[in-house]
Length: 405
Image (tube, rainbow, N blue to C red; front, side):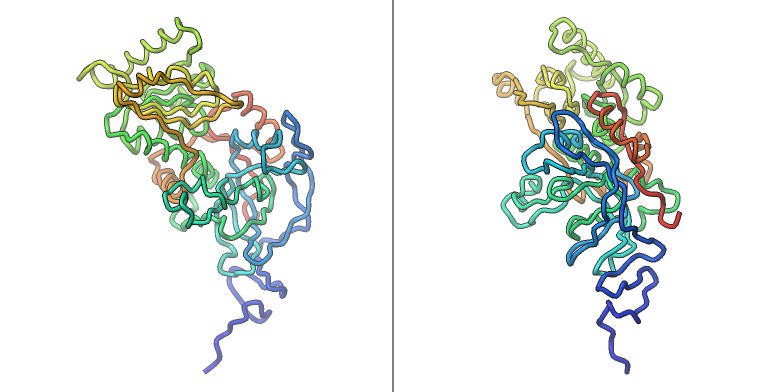
């Protein structure tokens, strides 16, 4: 009887998907790794965006790490926040943003990982055993590792990350007919949308208002609410964004309305009247005349956070998701919260389970993310577009071509 081979770094061992480099590292077949790569870098943090395309070395993974060849990376508005300042804990020089990547593991000390497809997201890892993790608040874990905070981000062709930061993408989701770029929208934006709707505690037929419906999180919030939860959706956003979304309105909302200047009492009263009319229309004129059961605010504009108690009926839920720049104070009359039994909450994002659930919604065709594909070199321009509120849906950058292409 031949002995079992237990030295997988032995050059004589042959695997169909990986080849030994003779140094303890294994590399994906038909996926040569260059010594240098392209990356979008912020050379020095400033008060405004300052990104450029540079060549940097590819870093081999150590024990407990892998090298991921990024195929697609989503672009999130928070990447702009991570690229100025800097915020506490972020590098001051040579910062690489991006935290919604998908690609193949092309190098690892663990051959079973090589060749598999994984996702990478902002919440790379958490300890799993602290008070917050045990309560499901993984985003509050004091030991969490974040991309692109402690770990350089996905705006580069090859990313070296700890293995516990990987989200395995199940094979059934990776059919030849699927555009993997769509899945980047699930990694942070989609999981945030799903978690926010769970906080809204909607029932089929309930009316939910999504403020910022045309954004990366907003349009997925509307899509999941309408097509998965079977709620009725009123979407609000800037007129230009509403027009861009109108062609595919039924994918994301039942009714779309243009945002008003909520700091002006007259225009707010006009919007409030249109919202009430829309709620009554969606309920078919049945029951009491009342506002929505919930409002989910995904906008990054502070103006969107005014009059929140007036969006919902008694017992309604107010879910805050967007985080406008600066130290902004939310004002809701205390008597309204108490006397009307209102529920106010906020959340950052969902966990790995929510990511995979949203990917399944995409695979099944229940929801259709609206994505704009761009080239890697276009990332700086589109990051500024995000800051200027000139994007609709999700922007996704192609970082590499398909393996072997």
